Length: 196
Length: 196
Image (cartoon, rainbow over all chains, first blue to last red; front, side, top):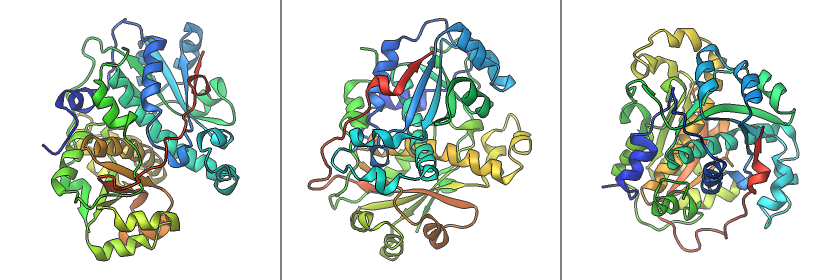
């Protein structure tokens, strides 16, 4: 065994976890989301910049406004998932760096004074955090349904502001009937890994 | 308890796992990397596009060439880590879609015929996979040291080609002496999560 992580955890997070397309009616609570965040907030980002922001779409009115911006194939599941979250990148994440990286207060000015640099670094690091969040949803025994089939400009205008760019929308809940297709094949080791 | 994942696994992957700056001399084997890949390959990507590619830098000669392209502060750890991996995005990932998404053979043409679209989708999804890989390194009981402080164009030219863009370089191994600084603070729930 080359892995230390116990097999049940491997199954829960990767081997048996699947992207759900249908969900049960069981609610996803604020306590569950808080527990997920309190776990995945420790995932690493460059300079601990932690640029991911999470918008929980709880009101029926907000849900309705969101569904309109989703690609047609994503609309039914976004309309019916117990909880939907908009994940976004805060392009002004450097404002929190004195709190996040207190032992080197100069780094915000040294590396992140320019907006394009923050947008690029922020997008990369928030995307890492989005993956940690997906793993965290699974750690809570829930299925995640991450989607990038949506009108990004429309979602930004409807729910966010110029400093927050949407990354993806995630449906969250217990899987329902026929929640997924058969698992698609993955690439073989030799298609992915090269040794030099 | 809102999480289903057992506390030892939470600690291994998130709470006690840290980004290592020094490493022990214990080697990282091909078997460990294979086991990590065989776990994290199941992490979700859009249309199962799986655009992440991994270059293991095993020869001293290749390591020396890589170190030159790292930011000065990253050079000592990249020179001494038991194993270093270059993670990159394959911008021609659509060529593998017939294998990866066999039930809808038309999607490569439908969504990914244009290179800029592939670059954007590929970067996002490979970055998700980079995060899964970091989690997988931790699942193997190893520390990951992901770095974006490097000359990306230089690394691409030295080791990759026009179709493969570097995402980050990761040092991998068992932590050594004084491997990390004290844990930096994370953002509070209310700084990250908004409910609408």
